[in-house]
Amino acid sequence: MAERKLRLLSTVLSDVGYVRANNQDSGFAGSRIIAMADGMGGHAGGDTASTIAIRTLAHIERSEHRGTVLSMAQTLEKSILAAHDAIVGRAKKEHQLAGMGTTVDTVALTRGWWVLAHIGDSRAYLLRANKLIRVTKDHSYVQHLVDTGRISEQEARNHPQKNVVVRVLGDFDIDPHPDISIRRAQAGDRWLLCSDGLCGPLGDETIREIMLSTPDREECAQLLVNAALKAGSTDNVTAVVADAQYAPRENWSLLNPNAGLQVPLVAGAAEAGIHSIADVVRRPVATAPKLKSQSSPAEKAALLAQGDVPDYQSASSPAPASSPADEAAAPHADAVASERGDNLAPHEVSDEPVSESQLSDDQILVEPTHSDDAADEQMTDTGEIPIVQKKNGTITADPSDPAVKRAARERKAQEVAQEAAAAKKKQRRIIAWVVAICMVLAALASGATLLTQWAMSQWYVGMSNGKIAIYQGVPTQVFGLNLNRLEEETDTKVSSLPRDWQTQLSKGVKADNKADAVARALKISQQAKEQEKKKKQEDQEAKNAAKDAAKADSSKDSSDSNSSDSKTSASSANPKDNLESQANTSKNGGAA
Image 1: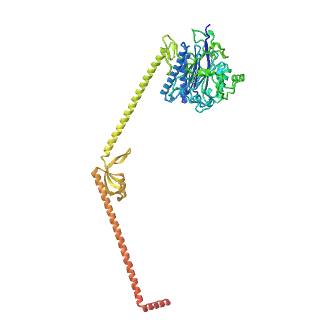
Image 2 (image 1 turned 180 degrees about the horizontal axis):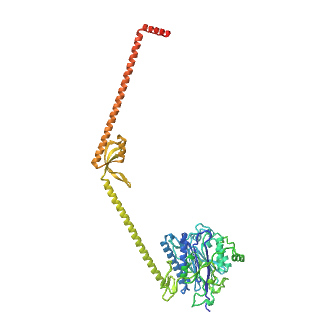
Image 3 (image 1 turned 90 degrees about the vertical axis):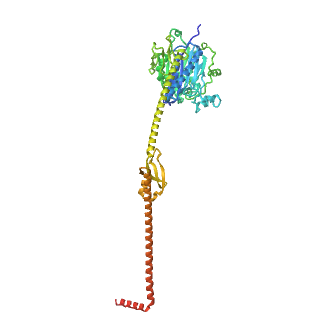
């Protein structure tokens, strides 16, 4: 009896949250691959990086993988590295996107095996037989502290550097190679891919309870996102929920390999690029459902039915239900589980894929724009993996396909040629600027030379160290450059000149030539000497006049003194006359 075929049924839900201004998470839910990316780097950079990652992985959803399980692992790794190159290239072309990056978690179902690729601090959980396995290990600084025993898991939840990643895709000097893990798929397996906005505030036990008790995938995603927001998440919150179950036999068709496949869903920032994703997938693609309010009737009924659901506001400790073997094996690329999926009964899940008729009113369905009679090579307008139509008519975007590799090389060569042309154009522009600047400098130098030559043909009389001096040039400066030089300094002090001459000399007295300047300086000096001589003469005359006046005053004083002395002598010589005179005076007084 042939082994029963497993199929993947999935959904995705992303919400911007209560704090962020925009949603930088992106998610994809298909029938062959599920993926989520948590972007980072500025207002627009995170959006762009996560969208590029999802769009680069979407080609795996196009057609059933016909290679080996290991070749699928190689395809995932090459696609993620291609996304890294595309993000770096975009950041170089658009400088406002510098520093952008993204985490990536993706799971593909091929030939009954799970192939997972992981880089960053987003997480992948596997619910199997009621046990929750954290399949990925965070590529973060805090996880390193936990691994080295410096802090505990509980301390890591509130560590101030919990958002510092050590491996991520993007414009950083960091190893972009993802961790790859492979394990046998089992019917009843349930996957959760989530951003740190969900697994940060919610503990593993809380996540397990919701995943285990909510059969409906969309309802499970709604509860997980709402629980994270209720628990205080400050980031974008994204959840991809996927179930593995046996495909109905009527869908086992080699003629129509897409029979029974669900409509791929795109969430978060990648919704803005959904048309290009539809072109990559070559099937209609729809936007994901929107977050429902917790007060909706459906959610109330779900919460009432789940009497044992824990309080989602509290962050529980990591689930102890996962076995040590699973935990140890999950992060390694060569880990392969030995159990058989067809020996275990699946837990109860919704068993119908999402069809176009099941889309809600708020979901948008987008048809691919490429026609079947496309040219030999068609590429998306995103600069990532080219879409190639091969000679046999098949269309592929598998990075491991020789035709895609050739197209990528040709595109790379074209980009290199364009960059070289741009570099030459820039070089020519720089040379033109240098030539122009040199010409301007030459013109300035020539003008300065002519100005200096003209200035040195001029002469004037000015001042130097407080004395009259002769200068060659003009009494001015241009850009701090003196246009004159001292030729001769005289002994005549400027202070000895009249004030109007001092003012003229401070401004400079223009002369026709050196001889004229010497003559003018000599004339000014002579005037100064005459002025000084005249001043000395006037001073001397003033001194002489003062002396004469002093002599005259002295002579007068001497004369007055002599007269007084003579009178005194006469009086003392004739006392009788004096008595008679006094008597006469008395008479005259009495008569009156």
